[in-house]
Length: 65
Image (cartoon, rainbow, N blue to C red; front, side, top):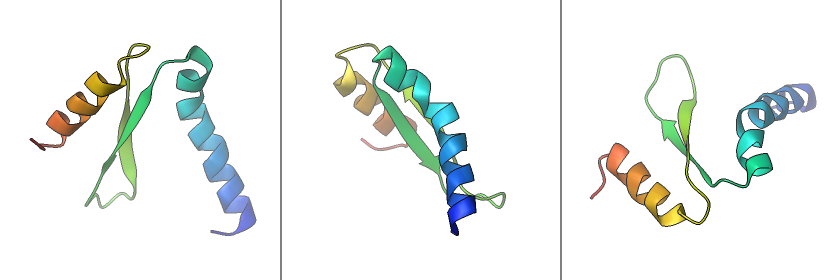
């Protein structure tokens, strides 16, 4: 990515992820692969000090055991 494209990407990303950082809640982003539209994913937010539950939920959603 060139500098301007990277700056736009970072700005868009902060708009999606800053709520977790500001609130103190853990966030886990799960990428969605093999999409024709391009890179995409979704994020889960958990309760404070519940990171392990967030990891377990993420693995379950991805089909991991």
